[in-house]
Amino acid sequence: MRTLARSASLAALFLAGALAEASSSLVLTDGQTIKGTEVKREGDSYLVTMVGGNTVAFPAALVKEVKLEDDPPEFQPPQGFDYSGPKTLAGPGEFASQDPKDQLKVFGGPTQWSKSAVDTTWVPTSAYDPNVDVMAGSRSTWSKNAVDTTVVPKSAYDPSVDVLAGSRSTWSKSAVDTTWKPTDSWGFKPLSLKETSPDAPVPYTAAALAAPPAPKAPAPWTCAEKLFAKDADRPETDKDNRSSSMDLRSLKGQQYASLGLPLYEASGMVGGTSRKAVFTIAGDECRLVGGDADVLIGLNLSPDHAMAQDAASFNAAMASRGGARVPPGVDTVDYAMAFVSLTDPVVSGSSGATLKLIAKPEEIRYIAEKAPGACSISKGKRRREERAATRSFAAPKIATGKDGDVVTFLTWSSAGGTVYRNTVVLARGGVVSSKRDVIASHIGVHRE
Image (cartoon, rainbow, N blue to C red):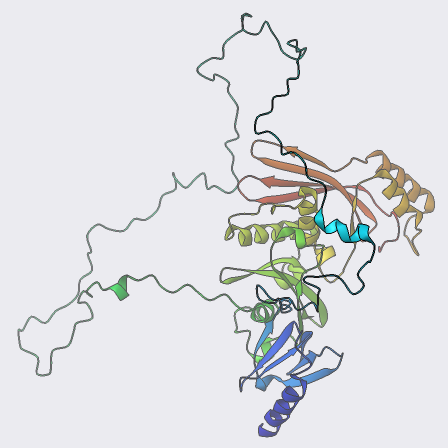
């Protein structure tokens, strides 16, 4: 073990100068930090990819923590300093013109009379304005009622409220403590020093009344190991309970940037097959919001039920941030499209299907022109599916209601070449839900 530690220290010292702009790092047990562009675990070894492309392996026994770090901000000079190079602050340039006209330009224009403080110019204006209603003051009008008698029906159904909470019977705590504690009735004095009884009341102090410390948020690598643990009831730190390999990266692409939520993507082995998990950290909990959720939680779910599971986890994570709402400056359609892409297990999971927004009818024709390599239906049936998708085309629409916004748009998925009509509801209470209907299938280059 001492030889391995010495080798790790030499590798850390050799690579410390070349990793100033890394985004992932390993913290060794001796306090050293190894920085690189990517960290991946294979068995009992952690593989660190350096900036130049080289990969260095470290034993798991020497690794204390795995961190994900962003690129350091660019250096900004202090206020009043300029590092951009020499400049001419005053006087002529390198070659001064000898032309008298150029030399007299420094005196500016000729002297002019200053403008009077009072504008004495009179401009006649017409007293007739065709846009003014001259009869408005003398015309009789109906006055607005002092009491608004308009009745607006409101739905009494709220899926997030327990309507039976007020009528459900529950056990209440007794007003009198009936617990009996036996006491010594002989009255003999104790032979040893008197100790404080465990039942004696504890005096109120500032330390006793202080709020308990807030739980520490788990690290992204800890969440990834926990999601891919073979047995959820056992600690994920057990060697035989961890995935044989692990890869973790931060999702910062344009596909999910509209959600305004920090997301991480982990790749591990489940039953000998590589799977993906997209999660976020909300408070002190790891929330699985995308990827192969059905396999990771051990349930055989359909794609629609898996999307509902991911949406519920997404809303629970956003509840700690004040609810799921469209961030300022983000288009509502882009937000709804990012939500559908995240919760669809075929898109965010290991299948890696492509999901495209269809904003124009020409896009359907462009997708259909690319013939698939192999398809289970004939060419004539594919043309009928294309016509059905074209007839059902509708541009993305946002309907604003009293309780929220409803976003409707079409998408094409490379999984089956399916065209969906997506309906995403953005409720005022900060809850997002989605529903999709199949319009056509087997369109364009797709996988069966």
